[in-house]
Figure (cartoon, rainbow over the protein chains, first blue to last red):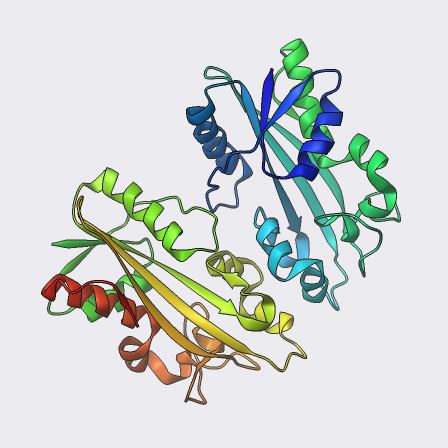
Length: 185
Length: 185
C-alpha cells in the first residue's frame, strides 16, 4: 500500500482515479513546505519530512504555475495566490499583455526509505482572458495548447487523462509496476 | 556576540546601525523558510534550524507586507513577489481600488539554546499610486501613516528610526540589554 500525503480532497480524488487498479491511501498530515522556486527542492524536503513521521512508502506532489510574462510568477506559490488575489488577480496582472503563455508543472516525489524518485508532468498552455467553466485552482483560466477551452470547461474526464498531475502520477504508477524510473513527460 | 542570520546585505546594514553600540555579526548561511502566512511560525522554524547549525546566540528576521484590499497578499511572500512581478505588479493589482491600506510587519526571533523570544514591529500605511524615490523592496511604494512620502523618499535616516524593522530589532536590543521580553510595538 502506498500513501499519498495531501490535505487536499480534490487532489486525492483525482489521483486515486489515476492509480486504479493500484490502491492508494490518503495521509492527511500537515507537512511544512519550504519557500523555493524549485519544485524538486520543495518535494524532496516534503517527502523526507513525511517519511520521518509515517515510516511507510509514500509520495507527495507539488504544483507550479509559471506565467511567462510574469517572470514565472506565481510558480509554486500558486496556492497562496489563489487564497489571496485568486484567479482574478492573475488576470489583472496580465491585462494588456499579448504574451499569455504559461506552463503548469506537477512534481511527484516517492520515497520508501531507500528509493527517492521524482516524476514531473508538464502541461503547456496559455492564460485565458477571463474565467470560464467551473473548477478549482487555476483550472478556469488555463487553456492547454491545442485547445480553445479552459481545463475547467474541458471537464474532469479530460483533465484526469491529460493534465500535468495525470502525467506525473502516471509516471509514478508506471514506475511502481515496472520499476522504470525518472520520467519527464 | 550575537549573530544575525541573513543573506541580505541591505538588511544587515540597517540592523547593524540599530544595534549600536551592541555589536552584531552577519551569519550568511542559507536557511530554508517554510511556506506560511504566519510570521511567528516562519521565524521559529528558521531560528531553530539556524541554531542547530551555528550553536551560537542568534536571531533571524522575516518581513510581511499585508495589503488590505488583496486579502493580505503578498504577506511573507513579498520576497518572491518582488523577484517576479515586482512593485509594478502590486500597483497593477491595486488599480482602481480606493482602499490602499497596508501593514508592514517585521518579526525578529532570538534563540540562544534556551531562550526563544519574538519581537514584532509594525508600520501602518498605504500603497502609493506609483513608485517614488530610490530604495529596495517595497520602500518606493509604501507611504507610512501621517506622511505623504514613500519610505524610499523619506530616506535611509528616517527609515532606520521608524520602520517596522527598526521597531522589531530595537525591542530585541532592549531585551538583550535589560531582559525585558515580548514587545509588540
